[in-house]
Amino acid sequence: QVQLVESGGGSVQPGGSLRLTCSASGSVPSIYYMGWFRQAPGKEREAVMCISKWDSPFTFADSVRGRFTIARVNAKQTVYLNMFRLRPEDTAVYYCAAGNPARGCSGEANDYDYWGQGTQVTVSS
Image 1: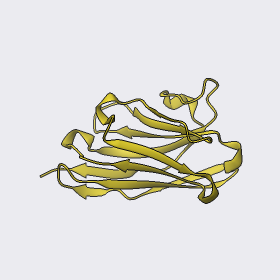
Image 2: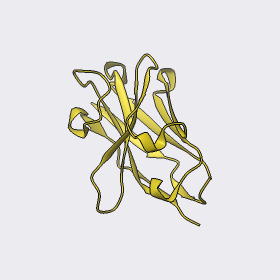
Image 3: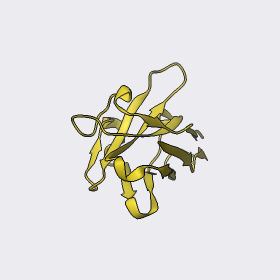
Image 4: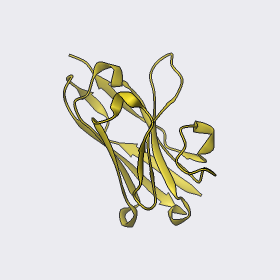
């Protein structure tokens, strides 16, 4: 079993930055892929980024390309989502996900077995 806990959310002005942290515990060595999803009110959950155990990142959401980065520190059992130049449309609950999708990094929520409770990110002036 794997447990995931997100932290680092909050309220920022447009153009600001936040760093989200996903702290994992349990059978982490068996997890090869971890990612971040987000869900805004009234919208479906959207894949943001994913990273493999070997530090190969993938961006799913075109709107965050060049503004967000993902990093994984296996020794610390931690994955970060670094967010820069935040926009109001980035407002959402951000979730950490972990699992072993058959085809590698996946943008499908159902391909992940473990989820955190989410952390709120609000971008407003």
